[in-house]
Image 1 (spheres, rainbow, N blue to C red):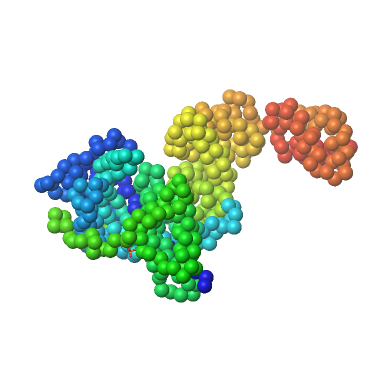
Image 2: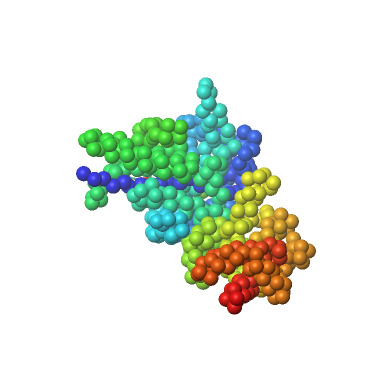
Length: 488
Ligand code: ADP
Ligand code: MG
């Protein structure tokens, strides 16, 4: 009997706020252990939580962006458990009345090759609720150390419906979701810093049936490639068990990166194990409708909408939009450059090829930590460069040289051209003289061209370009050579 996989994901996103969910203790990644705590975070007796409204607003914004309904009222529950990462012995979360209900995320599946756009579909969400992050435990050979810096950081948990059927869909979902969240400035979603964490639920069912099978939940998936590997491993494992006539145990499993396999961690706890009850210290939160309208107005254009717009109104190919549209700063850079010079295709080309290449080379060599905002180039550098190429002041080839120079120095391209004397030569007499020399010096190429081999012309263009330091107008050179050979 053939089986199909059913996958549901739970994603924890650390919301970017200055202070924690229920206290004024600051939160940022990378501080010395246990320096970002206070009495509330440590759960000392007699302390009371104070709600961080910025976290509520950012989570509501997240929900609006993902098409959720924002609750009229949301409230706080205690999820009770006894574990060293939670000194209060409970986690504040939203069990019964979450902030965001439903929702959906558009995903783009990979195409048949990197250069071809894949299909799009929507993945349905169940809810998004807010909670506080627990502390971080690090298990070493003979001891476990704990850092409470992370404890109390605002965490949004996004829960999907069991609505995906392959690791490919899950990966596409995570990438699209992450892009949207980063776009909206809700979180940086750096998985290595634990800002974006995913648990994957997997079950199988016979193809053609609707009833959900028993699922397992994989934890500790701290990169998208681990999510992919863990889902694939689990589909194979469950298939083997079912084929042999066995049954799946509902359990939580831990993904082990080293052995690329997962192990049972514990049998799945039921909601009643947590003895959820409303937190008596925190009031329910009434969501202000007019404020929600304002938040909605602040939402950025979603990346996939932007991609469609760039393809339609700027006629950019997918190969360029797929590079540009995953990065909001690049898109802003691009659109600003268009204000100076309306040449979308060429500008997009320079940004997604030359600029990104130099940025990554510069950050690899450690010269400077780089993203677009930090490099010396402004949108007007690139727009001006494309403009002087379009106006025939310099050739495309010289354009590359000017680009590299301005990337390093930050000088404007027209200034570089002036300083280095790089203007394209339209001096027909000079070029004609050089062509004559080239024709005389390479009878073989001339003969080949006459036999119909157009590429043989390149052997004649080479010396002319060399003599003019690449500045001969390429169109003029091409025309002159052909004319001179044809006319003998
Ligand atoms: P819990 O509260 O125990 O974590 P939920 O019902 O909230 O359980 O589901 C958690 C996640 O598991 C959701 O993303 C959901 O889509 C997914 N899920 C639930 N049942 C299944 C199933 N049978 N197969 C695959 N995923 C499932
Ligand atoms: Mg859950």
